[in-house]
Image 1 (cartoon, rainbow, N blue to C red):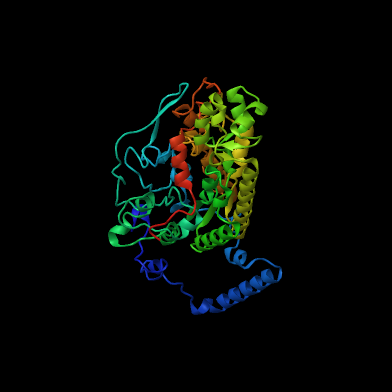
Image 2: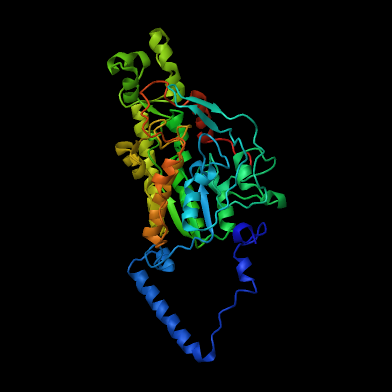
Length: 469
């Protein structure tokens, strides 16, 4: 048996053979006296199936029965996670053992009282974690010194398979391989590589015999393009549809209950600053700074661009901002349209497979418009606003708790999981990035560091080489 009771499967072996050939799984027995009743029951089932087909019920729904309804409970005893950095518990620019348990997936497992094995990474994390020394202004943020030794336990078989930087294609096909030198290797490699087994996220999910799978993948198919201010870098919609459909088909074939989250509007992250905030922070009207900086209404500026603004304003002849650091309003609209198309695909596949859908898109939009209040503190999506961590892309402990509750409510609503939600106020009270009673002043210095912005852009850049495919 594998970690936390997961059966291990040999390379190339059909996972179901473990149960088919097991002496502990008795074959069904029908006595002679029951034979006629069995034949009658079979005939009734066949007639019912035919009636459903004639009524236009999809074939997959016929085989799943009441899947996804309140009459089918999700068994979380073997919980598996497929996703990217947001599902891995990445925070403050790092995958780090002291932060990973605060991720939404770990919180869901803890609330449900079920095991979830995390591929814990030793301090100071990979990459080295960002640390807030002082809120300022300006905030003093540094990278922790030192070098991580990698996995805390190379013999632990991860059941949270989410890999920072992965897009949908990566989840399908990207495998680890020696040398162990990137996050794909660290998350998906040990302990399989010790026995010569290398599997992608999807392949491990199939091999681990999950009873429930949480799926949140696809953010990186568009996020890197937004941070690079280049919509041409998004994964084409047709490609996304083909890859996501394959992923869902194969995950559904495991027989596990599926919970699937959609993609938020990626322009809401504090790593991208809207023009209206720059107007407010400089105290100058748009008709003055717009021509100098080369920005217009509803544009967004990256952290690298924000760092250039003071110099340009003090010496206007050095402007405008390079196009590589400005996401134009039309480009932002194009990226949002792509996200909407992705979400339609996700919604369709969720319905097709009886999966619970978690609407992260709507959740983050509500926070953008209304904020989120806990313990009398109104948190926002702004940098150091309490929802996003120091890298300007990933949630804080509190942000992850809010996301965890969205997943829990979807499980409770669709599968009668009866999981208690996370006490967000309790989490916020101990969150080092929630500042009660402090309203940092609007300032060009209160933004994601340009080096951090560059690192996030590199992590999420699509079409990157996959050395281990």
